[in-house]
Structures are given as C-alpha cells and as structure tokens.
Image (cartoon, rainbow, N blue to C red; front, side, top):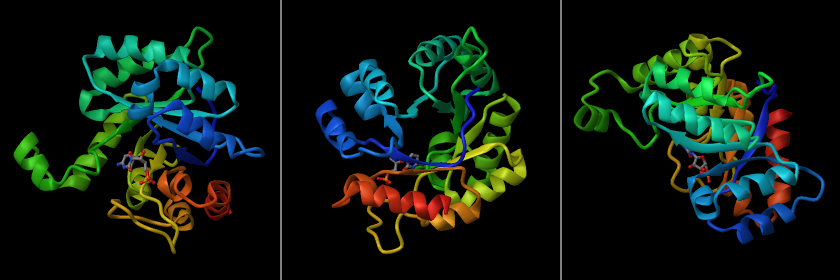
Amino acid sequence: MSQLNKDVMVALDFSSKKEVMDFLDLFSEEKPFVKIGMELYYAEGPSIVREIKARGHKIFLDLKLHDIPNTVKKAMAVLSNLDVDMCNLHAAGTVAMMEGALAGLTRADGTRPLLIAVTQLTSTSEERMREDLLIERPLDEVVMHYASRAAKAGLDGVVCSPLEAGKVHETCGEKFLTVTPGVRFADGEVGDQVRVTTPARARELGSDFIVVGRPITQAPDPVAAYRRCVKEFLG
Ligand code: C5P
C-alpha cells in the first residue's frame, strides 16, 4: 500500500483536458495531490489520469464504485494499473464488495493504491434515508457503522466531514484515514457546501487529507490559494 502523509488535495472539477492542463500549468514549483472525479474521467477517459500522473502529481481517483463484488474487483484491477494513489467505493456495497475491491486493487508486487469508502453522501439526509432507503437509524450512527464495516473489510479510511473525523478515528483507530471535503477559508465564499471548516480547524479536528476545490480552482491566484491552504492545514 502507498504510504502517504497528511496533505491537501485539489479537486480538479473541470470538464475538459484543456481547462485542467491550463490550471495545472499555473503550478511551476509544487505538484499538488489532485482529485479526479467522474466529470473529468468520463469526459476524457483514462488517458487524462496517465497524463496527470506523468506530470508528477499524486492522484485520488474519485469514481465511487458500487456493483457486485466480482465486477468491482475487476474494475479495481484496471484502476490499479493506472497507477493512482487512492481510489474509492461506496461502503453500501457490503463488506464482500469492499474485500473484492481490495483483492482487485493489489498489484503483483503487493503494493496497491489506498482504498477509502464513501459512507453516506453528504447530500443524503436522515429523511431521505428513511423514505428512500428504509434506513431508520440516525445518520451519524449509520456513518460510523459504515466506517467500521469499511475498517473490518481492510480499507484504509473514509470520506467524511471534518466534523466527523474525530469520531471516525475513535471508532476505527487513529491510522484509519479521514479524507474531508467541505473546507473553506475563514474569509471565503461557502458556495453550496453547508457544514464547512477552515483548513486549520480541519487539522485540529483530525482530518488526514482535506479536499479543496473552488477555494483554489476559482481563486484569482490559485497557486497562492493552494499555498495558503497547505500552510493553514500542515502548519
Ligand atoms: O469546490 P469544493 O471545495 O466544494 O469541492 C469539494 C469536492 O469534494 C468536490 O469535488 C465534491 O464533489 C467533493 N465532495 C464533497 N462532499 C462530499 C464528497 C465529495 O464536496 N461529501
């Protein structure tokens, strides 16, 4: 498994190669850890992952797999060959699916990308869980349960709110990674995020990786915004 320390991940929420390359070209000194999501991956295909990797960036490939264990195992084997550093799936796919994913991810030399789980999406409310999914338990109990099932399956961590990071660590151990979006500068725009924290607060709360999109990508000076984020988060 790759060994990674705490870091800031920049969410490359762009829909074309040109936009993403223009953005990455701004960085001449640093090589930020980046997150590639469905939009960019589906628009440009696996070659965009190879190209960004070849430029020296670490990559979190955020495709949130969820299917039968055998299908996820085989898909993860393909993603592992793309040489990404982290990828993810839905914990709702069950422990068997998560174990299949890990088996598929592991390369012949025994190394593999980190694998983290989505518990409940932050767009899902308790009301939606109850009415759409027939899940009656409180949201935070469900999130912690899914996190502990992910840990049981051998995964490396979960995506969660920075506000949940401490409790995830209490439940699943200090080494179980928390990857946390919903980060904003104290003086910045919140946008459509609801429960936000600053990079410094995310560090205090125990986040291992913060995922930051618009506060960096839409900043007048993205490199300065990235540096500010790193300074606040890593100290
Ligand atoms: O622009 P912003 O900083 O809000 O971007 C956050 C990134 O993290 C986006 O790529 C978004 O899809 C992702 N994300 C999130 N909340 C989650 C899971 C992922 O904001 N619960």
